Length: 372
Image (cartoon, rainbow, N blue to C red; front, top):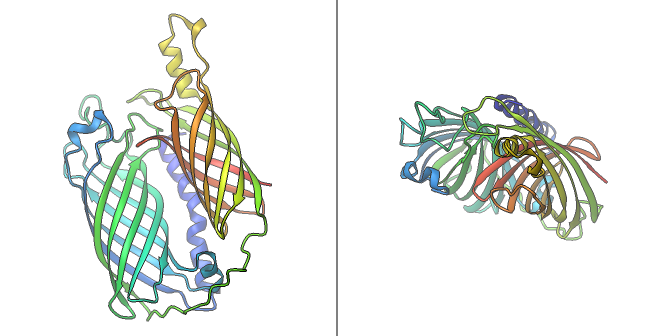
């Protein structure tokens, strides 16, 4: 699976989010407000690996344009007692190191719950993920220092916390903090990935006058009838064994974990997963080429604990894993997982998930799961 195919799959899995926006706009009993925005960004690069320390002394800057829907539906409001905004963002970043790092362009859908938007001063939190294109990548001959990016086609993950100030019923301003991550999920090597926090400021304009209803919280309202459930999944992707290679090796796996609902939209989870990474198998083959009989197993298994944030058919997943079976040691024994799942039927879902060892992304997988 080449990077471009993985990015296309990511777009297909995120498409339901955009169609869901349209459905809400058509069927809502209140008119959802449509808005546009423009923002400027200025940040810095975190030198999270020795391999990129010398080229991390830079201050990326960028511009961003948003198209958003602010959802007014009472059923949606009851999930978080907030009015979420959802939309799509197009951003451009210049990494201020043109000969090595170049720049990037990304397009990502997002969801952004607003807390107390009916007041002049409100706060919001954004999560977004989508495809990105970077202009400069690693090349052993022409760009040997760029260990950030191994392929032009990558993905971006955005976490954002913002303070919004409403000037009138159509115009608002904001100041926000972004945590941005760009990488190809380990599909092409090298893939240290770039983590670059940034401050941003901008202005939002709504095409209609916005008025948020003041609703009473119903703490007895049950959103999810199941208090606990099992989640099982199969995953797949591909990775390079070494930097600069054109060959990709399959990665397959499966997992199961138990969810327990502890709030209206929060579920704790615990379980296990197994991963068979054939790029690791190829690394082992090369390392033990003179002594194949003592080559360790490439399979790995881990315990997972974490939480799910539930928003209707969507769920955002964070998990912390620790290997209990790794004959061939990974970069770190512990790792993190960040995922977005879309439930397309009563029991089945599709998802995209990122696995990272600390700040370094190990892989990005697509998955099919079942709830029972």
